[in-house]
Length: 262
Image (cartoon, rainbow, N blue to C red; front, top):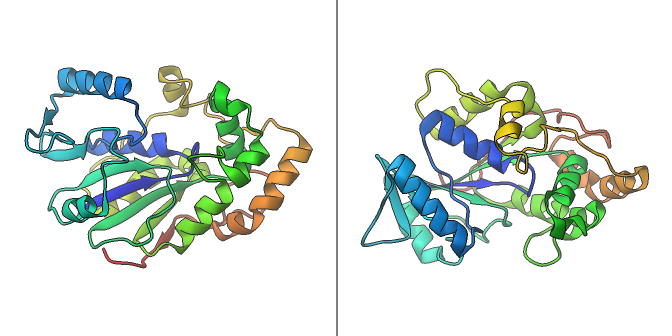
């Protein structure tokens, strides 16, 4: 099986990946990691956690009974390879910020975290020097203008995708993180005794770039920018359960789609 941890940038992908590791020692790997980062990742994961690279399939690693794809797999994962992995009895957990595939295969599922568009756009805007040059209202509609889509297109396409999907709201996760763990465990039939979570303060201390001081509703732009973002995103954000320009948890949580094959 393949589980895609699919979010728009800055909408909780790191949070989900940490939950998978804390609770089940499952590694959700990054398709966008550059070669230099992959070498460092392999060295650390081998030394600290004892991963073993499959000699017959060097893109695949094992960690105990779990499996995964070595980071940087984006161009490697063709539809034929997806079919092979999805049919295996083990499960691969893959991060993505991409729009959905045109069609999904038996054995593919999605876990998605959503976030109000204003703090999501602001957080991406603040993430790096390169993207900080892109206004948050530009990100809402156009993404980074090259490789990643805007908030509107990303969510419109995922809402239409015919694949089993569960959506968790970033805002509600912060309020009730244990509930997120239980929801994921039930959806994927993962064993669970006591949910394990880490506070945003601790995560910020460990990695202040990924976790910007835990500012869940951290909008710091102008009123004009906020109005432009909400005007562009209101329809799709409403379908996700958000009802106001003011960042707040959506009205319903979680949102689960049962379309497609499981």
